[in-house]
Amino acid sequence: MEYNIGDIVRTKKMHPCGNKEWEITRIGIDFKLKCLKCGRVVTLPREKALKAITKKISE
Image 1: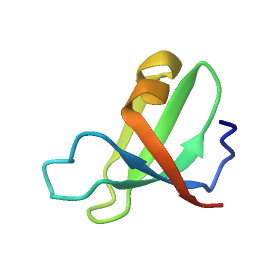
Image 2: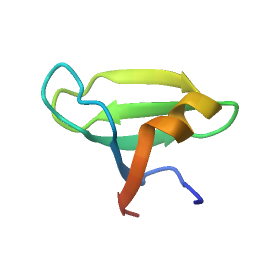
Image 3: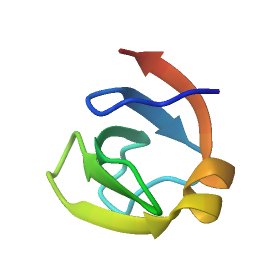
């Protein structure tokens, strides 16, 4: 699946705030994801991020 900046995605594991939906803010060797509930930003290596994402919700 192809991802772009601004896409909203759902992950396998829940964030501690109780949310599973994230916005992609950076793509490259790392993915930067922003939690849509609490606003926390996390950076994941590309391989780990692709395993964690289950589906794309919107573009």
